[in-house]
Length: 251
Image (tube, rainbow, N blue to C red):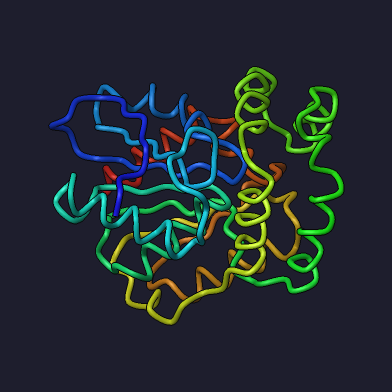
C-alpha cells in the first residue's frame, strides 16, 4: 500500500498522536490542536483519501483504515499513543479499532455515525450530481460553511480544499458515511476510548454514540451540551487538547 499524505508537528522521537479529519475538510481540522500539542507530542495529521491534495481516490472506510494501519506499522512500530477522529475520520478510527484491537492506547471518537441510513444513501448521488456545480461558487460555499457551524477563520481553508474534491470522490465518501455500521470485532478493542457527541446533533448521531459506548469495553460517552456536529474539535481546540492530555495523563 502507498502511504497517505500527512502533515506533521512536533519532534520525531516523541509519542505519536494521530488525528483524522472530517469528510470534506482536511488536515487543518486539527491544526490548532496540533500547534498546542507539538511541544509534548509528535502530532500526525493525515489527509484522507479522496480529499484535497490526497494521492488516492476514496475507495471506502475499510480501505482507508487498512491504509492507515499499514502506515502505522511502517512508520510507528505498529501502534501509537492516541488516535482522534471527527465524523468520517471518526468512522475510520472505529474501523481501525475493529481491524486492530491494539492500534492505539487511547482514542477519542467524535460524532461518528454507525447507524446506516438507506434512504439518505440512495439520495446522495442524484442530489449531489444536480448541485455539484454550486459547490465551486464562493457564495454557495459560504452558505454551506455557515450551516456547519465552523469558526469563521477556517473558511478560506474550507473553500480552497472543497473545490479540489471531485464529484466522484465526494459521492463516494458521503455514501460510505451513510452506510457504515459497527463490526463485531470492535468488542475486542483494548484502547481506552472516549466517545463525544454534541447535544445539538441529530438524534441518530446520539443513538450512534450510545451504540459505540455499549460495544466498546469500558468506554466513556460524553454529550457536549450546546454543540453541533464537529464543533468540539473545530471550534474549541484548547479544550480538546486539554481533555486529550487529561486522558493520557491518567495512565
